[in-house]
Image (cartoon, rainbow, N blue to C red; front, top):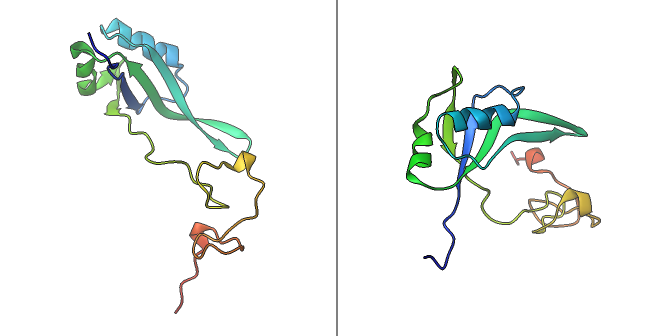
Length: 131
């Protein structure tokens, strides 16, 4: 018996068409004998629009059979790539105020420069190089 919990296996499934629902992906893995807890399609936002990406996150219990899922190349006649999920390292950082644990939706502070930290706004991609 463990005094700590064994982490679940988180995987990113690439090259699956974006219009395929996550339930079909989950059922396809179950048909191959894997124990799948959850399959979610990853999205990104462009302004107010939410766009589905051809990436799926699968969460499985960690056991010997489920570890072999990393070597699967085909799923329902589609060539896919299965990779371990790498989460973001470190805390979130606000791109306007440069403070940690801030998000744009809750930010009411004045913008600060990325380069020098003073009270003017200078986005990362607009750095001016001195010639």
